[in-house]
Image 1 (cartoon, rainbow over the protein chains, first blue to last red):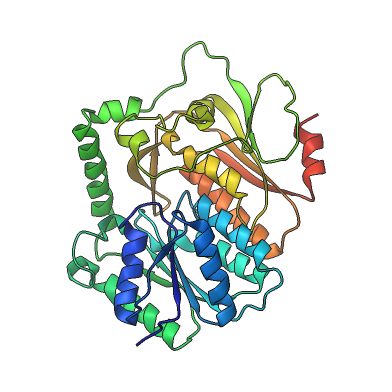
Image 2: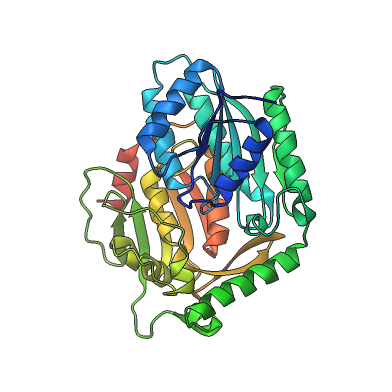
Length: 208
Length: 174
């Protein structure tokens, strides 16, 4: 599988964060050799690359973290600027989405995906496939596709295949093979430990 | 264990967070206006407001006071252009900077994971969107407002749609 001319956009300010990691996993499968552009680091360069790619008819994959139930504000800004710049262009490319969130349920990414769909309709862009990843707090706990991340790895493969074969279909949902109650306990313990490292008790973290 | 509103503080009725250009904030008793058209930095996602300086963002701009305002009001009113079923990026930036209002810890709400609340306050969450929009965009916006209301621990919520800025000006800024 090789989709060399495609563009991978990361919309997260975290270097080596979950959004970037998910793109890298996709790239491993697609054998893409180019670099990932980060919207938060160089928006102008990302806009330029986006416009070139959307005209060329290739795929654009945007990976971002869910911020307060929607796309991050800097991605919204990027989208608005693209809408203004793309007014007079003929767009042939296809937009694909990877949205991830720290809550357990991958379905919580739905609203953000719908926002991107609405943007595509407004701009005349073709919306391709979307993948919602839940429980992203565990994404780095082991190699992708192994153990608890087996299904996440399989889902990325399915997602890559559907892009390559231009398949249509519903949103791909995936999350680590774990139980919500334990995920919540683990996350809460993790935050408590982070507070403790900074000399804060749980009560101090709550009361401020 | 929730943080209570300061004793003796006279509760403001409404905190109005708005994105409307060239508007003068009226002096209305019980209202606090917060313009999103100021120089506001993006949330860095550093979690300092949760694990280093609980309840306080380390970015020292006008958003620093926001969680305190939110903890003391009866109603949060957001006024924003409707963009693709979402807020404007300026309003979205303000909302993202308000996360110290919540705790980092998770709980289960309606079979979903959400953050626990830092404050005992449970305001009404009202969003006034303005501008032309498709039905799909309005539906997405309704879902977003509902999700935000759950995450901010609101007791009630509503998404209202206005034709343009003028309609909103009449309601809140005169």
